[in-house]
Structures are given as structure tokens and as C-alpha cells.
Length: 195
Image 1 (cartoon, rainbow, N blue to C red):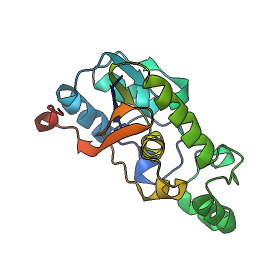
Image 2: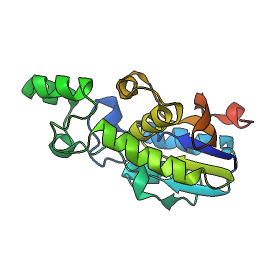
Image 3: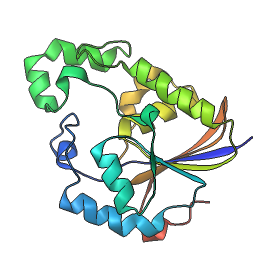
Image 4: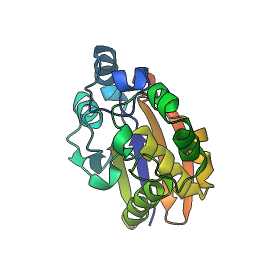
């Protein structure tokens, strides 16, 4: 069966502007305004999901979605780095950051490895491919990257080379083992047609 999985990255907040490992911050006023403006640009789906973060919840709400929270679509767990800026962590623990960025199995922060994230998201994606229809989910950029890496069978180190801007749509169409990818379509009124 063929399924269309549409992943929307959440709107901007201060954690993204700094850059800071997610600290549960709400959308900023610009992000909220942009998400509300993009509401009419979303493709229709039979099922709406969202990651559990504040940013995903607020983006889904601003987009007008009645989205169910999906635990498997949670962000990468960065353990004790949660809430800190990347600059701060890089200064305090340069070797740990270098290891984390180069080894997909590393967990110097005490959280989740990129390998584990990709396996978790890939498991969700493969389970969803047993359905037919359309799924739209508001998820953190790391989840979008993990889905793309898994679906296309990319090497794990490519995770860091995939950019996922705020309020963009990434679509995976296919089924387990064979996926097509459409990346980074901006959500704005002119982008409403994605077929």
C-alpha cells in the first residue's frame, strides 16, 4: 500500500534563533504569526499528528490542526545539554561535541544517539507504511532528518548535512523499503498545492 507522510517543521522560537538545544520555549511572535498565515497552505490528510514539544504543539494549533501527540515523533534527547546553547556546550566540552557530530552512536550528553533517533523514527515510518492514505505531522527538524535518512537508506553521517528550515513541508511517498522524497517546500499561501 502507498502512503504519503507529510512532515511540517515547526515555526521559529528563541531556541532556534540562538541556536539552543530545545528548552521547551514557546513560539516567538514572528513564528506564531507565520504559522497562522501558513494555515491555508497545508495539504489535506486523513490523520494529523505532532511531536510532544511545546513548539510542535503551538505550531499545530496555529496551523488550525487537531493533531494527536505521537511520542515516537519526539525530538532527539540531548540529555544534560537540554536548554544550553551550542556555543556554550562547544566551549565547555569541545571534544564531546566533536564526537557527537562525527559518531552517530555517540551520546556524550547522556541522551539519545543519532542512530537510536533514526531507528525510532524509522520504526514509526515503517509501521505507518502499512496504512494507505495521508499522514501530516508537525515534528522537530531532527525528526524530519531522521525520517529522510531512514527512508532513503542514507548513511547516518548525512543527518547533519540536511537542512530543515522552519515551516517547511517534507513529503515521503511510498511504502517501507521504497520511498520518494520531496524536501523543504515552504508553507505559504502559494504553496497550498503539493500534488
